[in-house]
Image 1: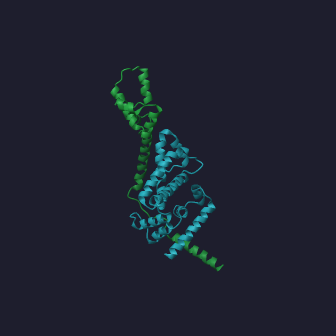
Image 2: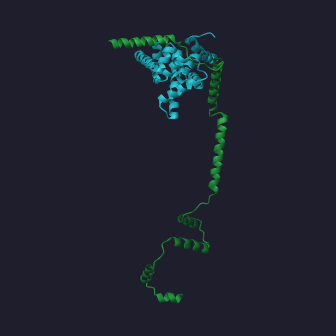
Image 3: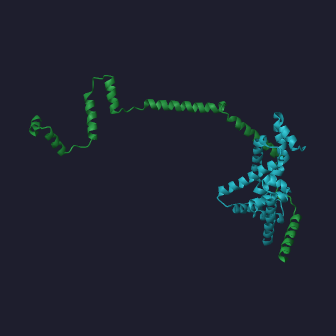
Length: 182
Length: 147
């Protein structure tokens, strides 16, 4: 599949006869990166699948209002992040349990997950990540796994580079402590 | 100072540790998941569009059931309104009698109605009867004679 740039994709999207095709290209171009970002947040495949689909449906509805001064990828990433956080909050409210226990529940799910393919060290790292506050986990995932620049992360999360660096630093320290104690 | 050095050495070791772990996500998906995902999303998007179209109020799928419900409700209310007997107040009955110049009355019916309303009032005590007789200067013996 040819990779089109944002301008080309948006140009096609704005033309009535190529609108659906353009959207299909957008989905194909970004689906994997968004899915993995969501999956790392919610752990379970079925949940990640639902959230990925909802993310693209929201994008389809809002693409007319997309301002091209931002990158399409960061805009989609922001929708995916919001959807994941909303999902975790809903789950917490539905089960009447605090965030900490949701992460504990996700940690237990990891061990039984048929789609977890990591080794023992990776399992430990994932468990350590699940002890972090939601925002630190998000920042760590984006920096470590997605290898995003702080500037890109700042645009997605609507925060400053300094705050993100501090969050990442705290996250790393906490993971380190967790792994040493374990 | 020594403590600070120790902490930064720990951190350095940890970053080295992170570098050693592969930073690929340790999860997998069902087979062909990504091949089918864009198709699933496109279908969902189309369903979403159809759903939007279906809620157009001008669509017969929407206005026909609404219209049917309104007709059934109207018929039901007009039917129940016509079959429920109307209860008239005394004033209304008087007006009807006066305006329609009804001069033939069923006396038994009138007596029956008045005796019913009489029971609804408070019972008359003996003192009230005696007072009435005194006020109207009625001799009790004349009543006994009449009876």
